[in-house]
Image (spheres, rainbow, N blue to C red):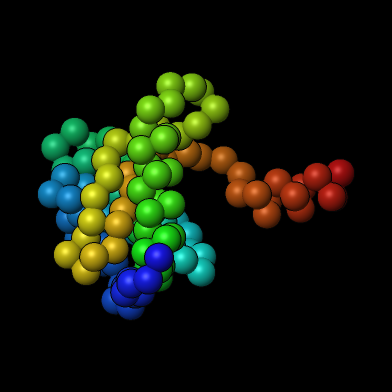
Amino acid sequence: MQGTLITVRREIGVGEIIGGHWVVEGPLGQGGMAVVVAARHVEMGKAVAIKILTRADPDAIARFEREAMTLAKLETKRTVCIHDFGTLPSGAPYLVMDKLEGETVDERGARVVAE
């Protein structure tokens, strides 16, 4: 698929409102294609994580949207719950999901190796 590359270069600021309902509380992680921020629902106070694509071609955006739609249909304890999906004014898609506490994959791997 040919098309425009989406690139979001600005920071997502603490206190910024995403999708009209989610206030950003701070960064959680970053990779080559996306950032994840901690956020909270403005009225209900529910803590969530928001994954925002920061650099993607149209194929990656389509995969991201399929991921959102597929996860939203699942009802299992083994996957995160999807609460919202949308597009920022910059054109970058975002996905609002459960914020989980626990070890990162790197932390788990280091602990297992150390045992």
